[in-house]
Length: 225
Image (cartoon, rainbow, N blue to C red; front, side, top):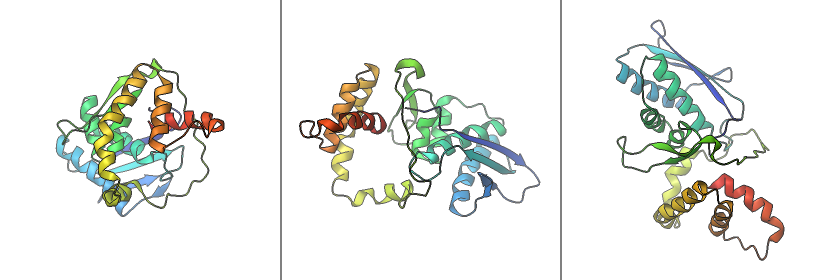
């Protein structure tokens, strides 16, 4: 469920005088791995557009980066759009989603509007996101409480890399299609009870023992599904 209150604004300018790509986030110059990830997307755009120029990328968030609020998803979705437009490319929504995914998997879902599903696929031909319902399909609201602006100890990229060390990972992946179908149907039918029950099942939640936590379970269902 894409949100309109958390925003990343990114501008990209290809300049022949730049000796290398420059990245500035919230007024601070970024180098190292952060710049490398951005340059990788810029390289894909340059290849598509036949450009040889380096680029200045300036980005601002109105929410903390690296705190677990999908800053990478917003950042690479914005980068894919801004860089492509700056390079004169006229890509489709599907092509934008594929390009954003190369920077961050979750970014593919930040391109389409409203309620979005990311199709797993096997590569650029079939791994992209698309809207399953428009913005006004269901009047749900996410309440995001920022308790810390510090970077999370384990970043998403590192977390994905070590996920396979969990003995639960294979079962989780194998069960993903079933859970996706539950969530998809619940959204299309505006069935919050199914979303809630699905979330409870994932957490081993027992409503009979925790009736006082029901509002919290409702909120978590919207966040995690």
